[in-house]
Structure formats: C-alpha cells, structure tokens
Image 1 (cartoon, rainbow, N blue to C red):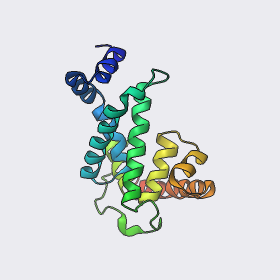
Image 2: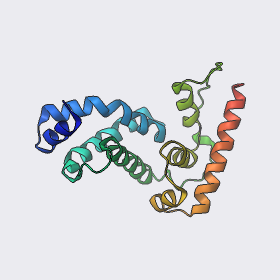
Image 3: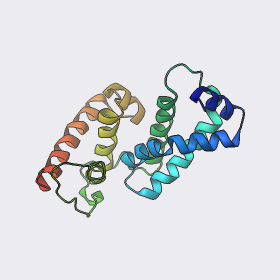
Image 4: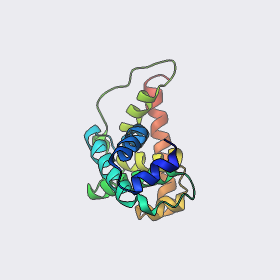
Length: 174
C-alpha cells in the first residue's frame, strides 16, 4: 500500500492500516526512544504513547513534508515529556551515579549497539542534548525552547557530552 493511501486509511480509522503503519515504522521510532531513554521498558512505554498520539492526531497531517519526519517529531516530544515527568532533564548533569555499569567491549569498529551503550552511559541531560543536536538536527535555540534552558546551557552540555563520549571511546581503546 502506498504511503499516502496508508495514511488516508489510518485517518479513516482502519485498524489494518494502523497495524501496517505500526509494523512499518515501529523499529525506526523505537530506536529514537532508546537513544533518549536508557531503560528499554521506558522506551517501549514512550513508543506506545507516541503511536497513540500519532493515531489520534493523524488527521492533522496535511501531506506537507515528510510523514516519517512528522512522526519522529512526535516521538522526540514524547521522550522529552517523559524525561520532564521523571524530572531527569533538570537533574545535575554531572551526576555520574546515573551511568550504566555495563562495559562496552572493544571492537575495531563501533556498531549501532556499541553506540547505544555509550549513549546509555551519558547522564540524561548530556544524552538528551546530544541526541537532539547531533542525531535529530535541532538547533540550539530550538533545544533551549523545548527544554526550557538557555542557548548557552544547550551549547555547553553538547560540548560536555562530546567530551564524555570521547572519554568513553578512549576507555574502550577505540
């Protein structure tokens, strides 16, 4: 089924179309959740919430721009809302107790799983800003507005996140 027809069917409330949409996009959208949320279970919960929002607001999608991009924006916003509710976003960014204890095994090249493990070792504030800027392509002003922080805080947390990622890479002798 063509994407436009699939979207139209979802707008009509077609359960089969909704299932097809979920099956088609869940892996990509779940990967976004995992980049923001270190706990697998939290990422699953946020993905469910995001799809609920996608299906209840799909009538607002007007075929201007990418549908996948529209869904990704919803997923990122749901991740940020989850983090705000958990009050992690404003936690002390230097709190190293939040770091995972699991070590990444050294490889000649990093694979996606290794990168995810490295991201999981970053404090939540670092990980969030790193994801938004490096992976999602948000600008510092947008990050500041979405997170309720200053532009300079966004910039400094990105610098610290990159520095910490470099340290983690050095620890595994990459």
